[in-house]
Image 1 (tube, rainbow, N blue to C red):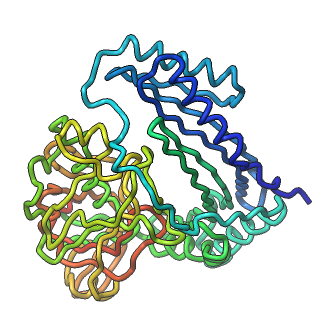
Image 2: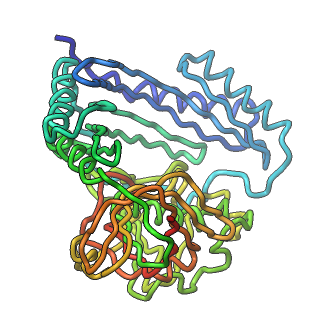
Length: 447
């Protein structure tokens, strides 16, 4: 029985590499520098139709060094923590910087913005199963899917994965800190056949702690149920109707919000929400906030990719856009202050209403429940939105039949204003946390 290796995630070599890189940067004439070292290890097994497809052990590490020569910046990286290799990449970064034009916005964060408190967010829960145990879980997952209904006749596979990482970040402002985290998952995708042809769907579970995962058989059963309910899908006539985004796909709407209010989009003037700070962009009941300090959550972090302290804050309050998503560079470009989002948002959360998904379907009356989005037809400058979709047609407050090969279209700026309700079925498997979202009206293009 092969087991996962015991942890190789020793912080001492990472701290040493970071500190040596910073010392070398100073010796080679850098006016400021930062370095990030990381190590990771994991196991991933994949099965299909009861047979092993892949077994993969992963071990990785890296060091990225960024130096500043005044307002010039250069970066270089290596996977070798040896002193000679670290000195070489620092030299390479300095040589790059010497050939780069000055940019007044380059530089480290302001020292007052750096993290000074490091709460235990309970992110590290290593699970090191043997290969046999991981394979048993993957096979049980797929077996549960294939056995659930005779119409499930094929599989795209089931997988079990576990990964743990350690990161150390430091800069020449005498800041150095580490973070350690794990993430485990089980997934399954199967194919069913009905009178109208074949359909596929999937399900997965993901968590920091193995004990928080759904059971492997439950994941397989859910994948099968979602596939069978899509059989005999049909198209519908083009119409303008309410559209209800199921929670797993509703999160993409908030991702479009984040993209529109990110610093890089704003200073490039490539956002449909340009100059909307302190303006209403949603109905007055909508609240969107970051929760970076949630225990065991996927997006939790005490500091961002620049060492800046993360904080709980509203991005949308009472429907009004109250904050952007900025790192130090983009904040300087906009003459603002970093929001601690170098590397992205942290557990972005849309506050739910009081109704379940079934109740939202009933409230919708007649319209479309979207369970899958296809393609990426979104214009970040204008907000125009057009994506392929599949889901279920709703009439008289009840699901009537599955639909596919349709397109839903609108404009994100108007779609945000047309939020009607948010369900209690919050999907917490990712960094964006929200329930199903009901939008008053969109164009559904079919026959």
